[in-house]
Length: 170
Image 1 (cartoon, rainbow, N blue to C red):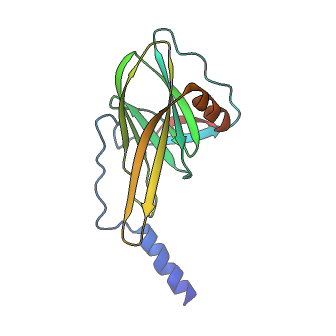
Image 2: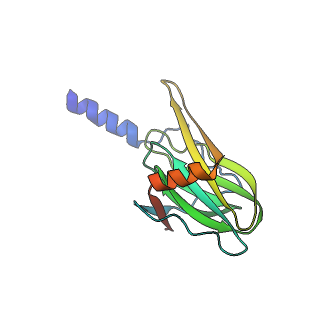
Image 3: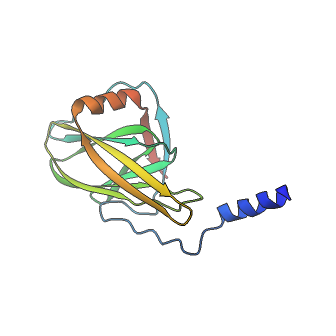
């Protein structure tokens, strides 16, 4: 009886539900066909100052989920995180459209993407915290994603606390 229950449970987790929606991402994301391999490294030095004539974005993911989240700028993926971690990217000054998309799992086949548009100035570092919230009830699974600009002190604290994500598109 116990093995029959485990077999049914495994089949239910592996089978994609018929009501799963096709992946539709905002224009600020990259191609849904691109995935990342992500490694994290603890105790890394603070990021260097922004490149000359550029702004620096520090994407910080605060999440209890150990799965990959892809980050996009202006329609192209620029990197990924895994759980509580961060990475940096340089951008030209001006307005940029940001996206984050957390990969799903066996119980939830993808989460709502987070989007935000911000104006960036050359020579400045911007700390952006990405948070994913999930509500799972007996009849529904919903998610929400937010980008929150952080003060420099809070951003610097979180990058001391979290490992650096190093990602590579596959």
